Image (cartoon, rainbow, N blue to C red; front, side, top):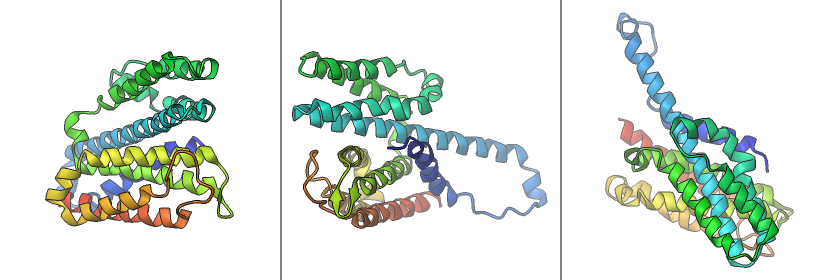
Length: 266
């Protein structure tokens, strides 16, 4: 796996979100030049929104890693769980460390490292379950640092989901070669990301059903179909879906997410 994926995808997702609101006339009229301060404030607001989408996306990826680690631990597969416990620190934590400080989130790298050390040293210890719960709660606490009002906004959540699904799509593609699953870790990573993307969408589904019923129907059905690519946490002998099929479903979700965002910004 390559950490650079996590650095770029959330920003790309937010770029799609803001595009529709940034396409107005940019000619240097007197009216435009007379409103420099509001424009600067608007840009700052957009930058802040992009940072929060990026932060939320990376927290969601952390949560996805831990969810799949829990599945593997529950199946008594600690060796397979180890990399998924390690990845939040190895690939993501440093990218959000400054934002965690800005949001006054208590440091939890130590919690994640302690969990990984425990699983490596004493995988059958009863303390593993407690340590995993603490790690999950730490990530949930970091997510809660984003204002609740924002976390309930479909546009914001959809932008984060887009970033998570882009990563899941790439990991799934990396897991498959010559029609076979050859990289179990990437398969499992993508499963965890999709599971948490579904959880995020559940949080806004009622709003979507009311305000954007057509988009909701398309997103919900595509999410359900997408999940079939991961029938179990242990990879099947042959892929349930091709990378092209997964990419098409992710594309449908993103397309309808953008329709929602466009209609909300008008």
